[in-house]
Image (cartoon, rainbow over all chains, first blue to last red; front, side, top):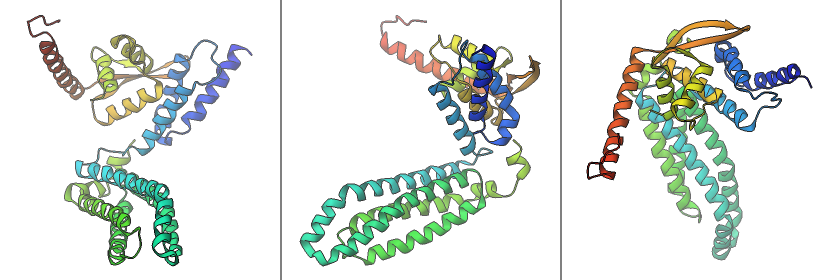
Length: 217
Length: 106
């Protein structure tokens, strides 16, 4: 294959990866990055290396997740807490999977008739945990980008978690109640802290519509 | 300040440079230890521009391709100077304790 064909192939590969970047960034810097990529390519290189691909994909993810302006400290803290909430959901899922067998054993030993109820609860929790994790991360992204809907979802999540916690406090029958209570309580505290942060005065200013200031990229 | 950011600002401290030049300069400054890739470099450049630490100096077309030169701003100089002073103080403290007899390597 000729070196021109090699370069054309390499360029097509780079363009495919650059397509992962946000459109505004691509329009502004896409050709410039492509020129640097081609300048730094090895002589006769035909394929994009794994490390280079990973670097471009990581850069694209950062650009997409990055807030348009610098959010206030309160909001940055809220975003970190939302990520922590996602981590708690992940820990919950891992706990459910790891302890499922021992919970089954305990329940069957104490009261086998209760097992279908506990199993149903375990399945609900195992399905809800990844969905919850995705929701915490989505709201974290929305908050970082200054989307007002994310604050409303925060309030909704807090109400939902409060309701779930009240139910968990009232339910002492299942063997899983204590772990459920700890996870629910942790998430409730996190949601309360996030709510206080996102509705604080410095954060509120960030959510006020300033399209020219925040979207002029 | 992350090391890549520190090195990019250092590369721009004595004059404007384009992306490829910054990559080469950062490798030279770090003794070949830090080799910036394009994705990392342009993510950092975008953040530094947003933070007002660098700005676009000029644009040129070389062989039909855009070449953009970046320069450090006064704010960027201030931040780089503060970070360099902090690192210098830390390094001095470490070397003083490693060589208490006064044999500080400078």
